[in-house]
Length: 159
Image 1 (cartoon, rainbow, N blue to C red):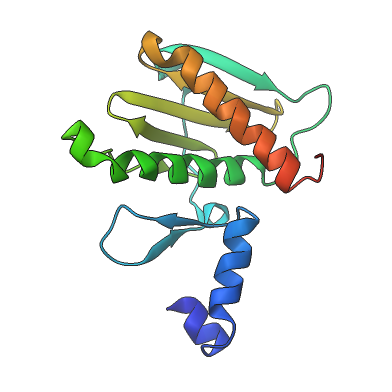
Image 2: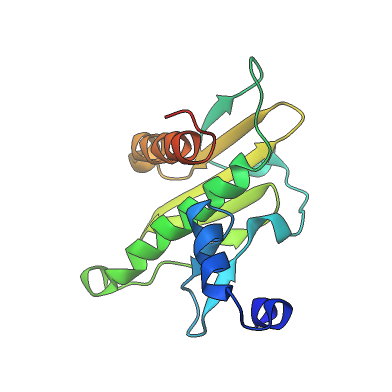
């Protein structure tokens, strides 16, 4: 509705497609309405990483730098991946929980029981992945690494 208002109906589909292809937005399929996630508009939240339980993996960018927008694009890919789990709900007899998202923190369920927490630390130039269930620790690292490679290739032009 906002884009329709701003652009007066012209080129809205083009802008939505462009923003989705550049991972600046993602469809939000956790509602019956047509909604979109725009991570750059998320509110900030105070997160005490010491209170997050589970296995932890830190992706450290301190020897180079963590480009602006990488975490937001990672959130778009994670939400899209999570939604794919919801599409197969008849196989699981469960629904994937709706992600809890903030500017630098997210809790996302990829499939029933496979929950990850992502935390961006801009000062330390790192992204930390927390996984509550040890069974999914390796899988979560592989999924997030693949997503970061996709962002690097598609958006950062390193492909």
